[in-house]
Image (cartoon, rainbow, N blue to C red; front, side):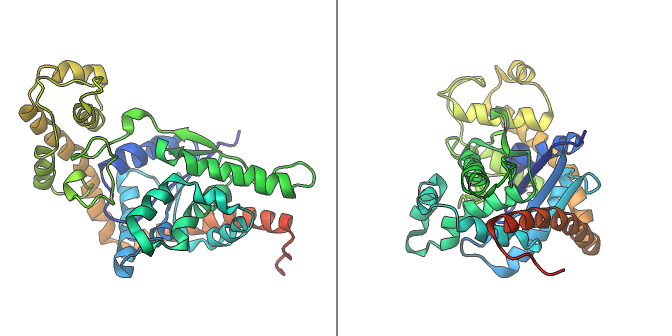
Length: 338
């Protein structure tokens, strides 16, 4: 039986942090054992906002290296850079031409980001959910790992595939595009900000202390955890909705140690914040140490890293172009000469 296919990716903007690893990339390691997995560095999404070209190139390679350092295996998974596969942009244009504008205007994240950017909002920022739909649909993905904040984007991809392509252009009833299903991340892997447990840990947060970078040195990790927002109550617990900071920090401790919630609750129930933060810092440094060591080895051999991405591009091209040709033919574009 052919394994189901999974597609996911991360933007190369800013440094990858603990939330990216524990909430996304860490799950990829298990997924690649049972699924056919495609993981891309989504650099085209990174240019929807003002950026530094030199930094983008460096971050793209760095992000790919971190995929590998975290345990993504190029022998099991296809690892590639989004912009290297031109079919992403080509399918995006086709989907742009069938997607109603009002579908885009109702996207929650666009509204939030547009408020922050004011008059400097690009068309790309409005349109990036269609590009995201193209990313997903090109690879006939069966499942797409998404957090709660990304469900709306996947629903858009499903609606475009079913309502705007399959229902309008399929002549025999056979689907032109596969309609993917969400693979929802568990609540336990949703990592929140160290400075405000109401918000997700984010690369875009201007406060560096809100997140722990995967490449942060041990002394910086300890400093950030020491300064993390807490409360004044004694003892630590998961389930109290009035104590989101306790829940978040305990969740991080659970994930970086591999312990169960019940084990952590028993260990930390009567522990004070000072002792716990020291414990959490030590556990986090220990968990990130092998990733950082592997990353340093990988970036020393840029030729090998580029070879992995070139191999991934070839595989991604093959799958993506097959889908693009199928869609192009269905909507009436003249087939390319052989």
